Length: 357
Image (cartoon, rainbow, N blue to C red; front, side, top):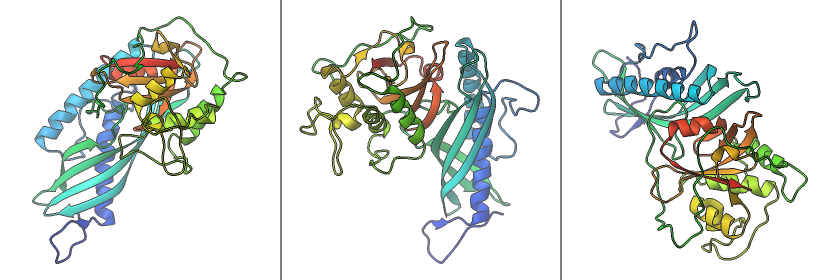
C-alpha cells in the first residue's frame, strides 16, 4: 500500500515522496494518453484510444476518459483538415502539492507537454509547448493502492490542445452598445494575405514576438501576475506590446481610454480583455482585421468563447508561416506557438476578434 505521513491529528497530511511519485505517474499516464490521441498513428505510439490499465480509475472517470480520447481523435481529424498534424509528443507531470486525509487524496500537478509539428508545408515551427495545472482527487482502496476519481483543469484560459472539454469562463457583462467592441473576424482558411513590416515603423513587432516567446513560461519578475485574479493573458500581451513600443496613456484606472502600468497599480485596460479592446479601438492603436488568419507577428487575437458579448481571452501572434498560418503565444494556459487552427479546432463556435497592431 502507498504510504503517507500520519500523526494523531485528523486534518490533511502531506503525502510522502513515494506516494507523491505514484500520483505523478498516474497523472502522467492519463495526460500522456490524451496527448497521444492527437499524434499521427505510427508504430510504437500509445495511440490505441483506450485508457491505460496502469492507472486505476473509478468507473465514471474511465468512461469520461474514453470519451475524452474519442473527442481528441475528432480534434486531430479537424486539424488534419486544416493542414496540421503532430508526429511526436512528450508529456511530463510534476506534483506541486499532495494532501491525504481520511483515505482521500487531493493532488495539485503541473503538466508540461511538447508536441512536434509535422512538416506538411515546410515552414511550421518545430514544436508547440504548454504548461497547465490540474487537481486530482483519489481514494484509497482496500488491499492497497489508489483509485483516481477526477482530474480537473485549474487554468482559466483556453483548454490545452490535449484537454477535451472547454471550461467555463468568467465573463464581464457588456451590452455591446456603450463601448467600441470591434467587429468579429471570419475564421475561413485560407485568408487573403495582409502582410506587415516587422521592424522599421512606429512599433517593433519582432520585439513584441520575442518578448512573448521569452516569457511565455518564465514570467518577467518586473511585472505582477494576475493568474488568480481573472487570468494573466491580457497583462501578458500588454507587456509584449510595451516591449515593442506602445506608449502608456496616463489617467484614472477605470477609464478604458487610458493604458498604463506602475509599481503598485495599472489601468483596467492593461489587464482586462474587454477594456484592452475598448482602449485599443478608441485610441486607434489597432484596427480589426476581416479574418483571423490575416494576423501577423505582434497582432492580437481575442476570443469570446461562450458568445455572450464579452471577450474572454487575449493572445499574441509570435510566428506566421509562409502558408499563412499564425502561431499564438499566451498566458493562462501558458502556451508557446500554438497554431490558430488548433484554437479554432478546439472552439469552432466561438466568436473571434483580430487586431492589426
